[in-house]
Length: 264
Image (cartoon, rainbow, N blue to C red; front, side):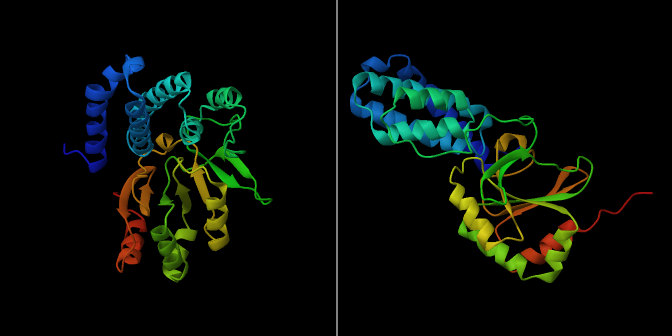
């Protein structure tokens, strides 16, 4: 079975980590300051890409970032941007207790306000869940109900191309009618930690309120690597998906959403 580009990139990162970074992490005290800083930066890049494709690699890279950060802190050479990067990595991974410990450790640091993203979850974390906005504009975390044996659509958004697609859909009566008859989720990657992005989307497209995934991994079948990517699920299983939005996309989506013919 051929690897997807995401799988290829994930495998390449794993090889680089095993060959170059794992040995280095065993003896960080011998690593020079500049090399240590570069190591932390590259680990951050690996962790970023793992958020959308290599879910098994996330704790590996984040843990390595923590070890590099500890060594920079021991040397007194840590930068504010490095504290921020690790803090955001912890919150994206929903490691809220560890993020709280980090904030207490660096009390004088001006941490980004991630209120709402760092609340202890009262949800089933093994099922699809996400952050949406309440009527008062506050983040609200809840599980997202998807029909286990029914049809639904998940549209991954988070860039201006996705906004263009939403405008096109909003102006297409046939597509709007089809979507109104099917459970539809407009979904951002869990790597998004800016509530203003959610607010801005909802201001532009109040008919398509967005959700930020709590954990990308629990959204089975959903591709977070490209935006927009439209997923059509039939009987709870991914039946069609396509990325981007072009001249034929509306007709493609309508065709994909047609009810499946039943076999008698």
